Length: 380
Length: 154
Image 1 (tube, rainbow over the protein chains, first blue to last red):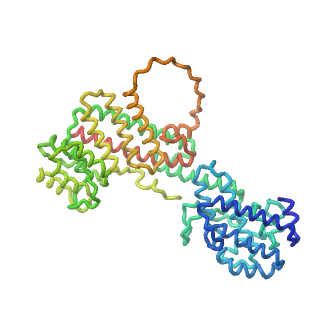
Image 2 (cartoon, each protein chain N blue to C red; image 1 turned 120 degrees about the horizontal axis):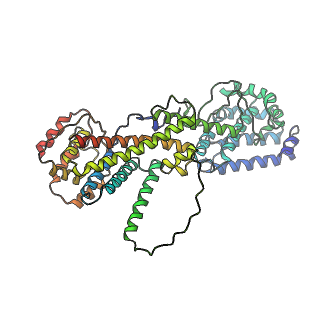
C-alpha cells in the first residue's frame, strides 16, 4: 500500500490509481458491511458516512479520468460541500457510539475504522474543496497548512494536502492536531446544539495523541470518569475522596454495608413477624398510598384482595391511624396477580373493599388523607 | 456530563410502590405460612423476598436485576428439584483441584462479585450497574426500615 501511495503521488497516471480505487471501493464496502444495520443504501442521501465516502470517490474518479482537477472539484464541491460540510461531522459518531457501547471485544476494529474514515473523509472533502465553503472551513484550512509540519503519518500525506488528486487515500490515518486547545466535545450521548442526531465530535486537545485508538480510549475513559462521578455522588461521603482506588474501596464498603443492612433488617422482620399486627400494617399501607380519587384511571387492580381480606378480618376495630408523611408515589402492580390471587382466595367480603381500595391507590396530591380514612370507615 | 437516569432521585430514595407491594405481599405470605417454619427459614425467605422485590421493581431493564431474577429462579428450581428428588446413594467425594486464588486486591473483581451479574460485564457497564444497584438497595433498606418501624410502633 505504501508503494502504491508513493507511486501515485505526482502522477495522474490512471494505471497506478486503479488499484487504489479498487482498494478504496473495497474499503467502502467493508465499511458498509460493518455498519450494515444502519446503512442507507442510497449514496446521495445525507445519512451515513458511506454517502460521504461515495461523493469523494465519485469526485476522485471523475478527477482522475478527466485529469481536470481545476474544474471538477469546484463544481463538485459547490454542490456537495454544503451537504458534505454538514455531514463531515457525521453519523460516524452515531455508529461509533453504539459500537463503543458494545463490549469492546465485539468489534475491535470498528471504532478505529470509523474514526479513521471520518477524518479521512473530512480531510478528503476539504482537499477537494478549494474554497472551503462550509462553515468549518476556517478550521481545517489552517490545519491543512500545518499538516506538513505536524503530521507524523506517512510522508505522502503532506504532499497529498496540496494535490487534489489525493482524496482517494482514505486509509491513511490523519494526525490532525487542533490548533485551538479548546472544546473537547463529548460522547455521542450529548447532542450538539441544533442537530437532531447525536454524534461523536471528538476533537483532540492540544498536546494529546490523536490517533484513533487513543481517541476511542479517551472517549471510554471519559465515560468511566463520568460514571465514577455519579457513583461518588451516590455514595455518601465519597465526594471528598480523591483517587479512584479509595473511591472504589468506599463504594465496595457501601455496597457491603447495604447488603448487611438488608440481612439485619430481614432478621428483625423475621423476629417481629409472628406478632405482626395487620391493623398496623393496614394503616401503614393506607397512609402510604395516600389519598384517593374517584376513579382508577389506570384501570389496573392494584390491590391484593387476599391482603385486604386478612387485614379486614384482623382489624375489625377499624382504628385507622395515619402514620406520618410517607409519600409513596403509587404505581400499578401487575394486573394479573391480583386477579389470580382473587380466584385462589375466593373470599367474598373483599368485594366491597375492593372498590374503595382500588380508588385508594390512585395518587392524587390534591386530595387530603383524612378523606381516605373516612371512606374506609364508612365502607366497613 | 451525561445526565442519565442514574442521577435522578439519587440520594433520597423515594420508595418504589412496585417494590413495596411485592415485598409486603411476600411478607404476608411468609407470615401466613410461618406457623411451622423456623426462625432461620423465615429469615431466609424474607431476605429472598427483599431481593426479589428489588429485582422486580427494575424488571428487565437492568442487567443486574435480570441476573438477580435468574439467580433466584435457579435457586428456587434447585430447591424444588432437591425436594422431589430420590435420595441418591452417598457419593464418593472427589477432591476438587484447589481453586486458583483470585487476587481480591483487584477492586473491580470484588465489585463484580458483589453486584449480581457483574462477572459478565466490562468496566463501565459495571460502574453503571453498581450505581443503579446501590440506589435500589438503598430504597429497599428504607422500605424495610419503614415496615419494621411501623410494625414495632403500632
